[in-house]
Length: 143
Image (cartoon, rainbow, N blue to C red; front, side):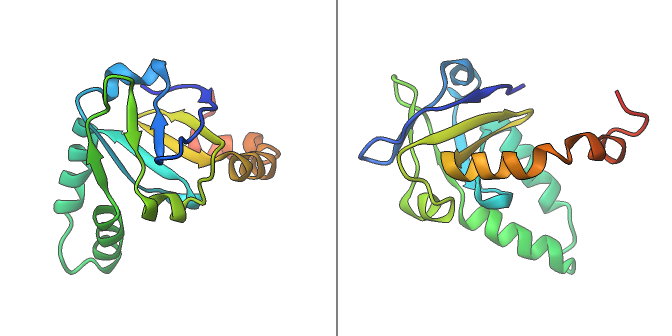
């Protein structure tokens, strides 16, 4: 399970040093793809394969599943982190998420999210006020 907030930097070659806390789980391979809200999702290979199976199980006649699958898989980039725990984020994904130098990498349970620092701060500021209000809909019965 991925938890926490980290603030690494993107180097000049478009590489991200994965937070040390996440490296063991991602050492066997990571898939980075477009996420919602203009961030990137990074999945350990087994989790990406689980999601791929769920998408494959959808009928080809499901228009939403086709559309989601196209973007999800077409933008996916897989690699194994190097010995320093670095992964390259391809230019098309950096452009999608408007990644510059300063990043925020968050643990989001079964995935890691990669955000431009300013975009994350804006998202957090806009969503924190509603955090308490959405608990009931997300966690029936509450905590």
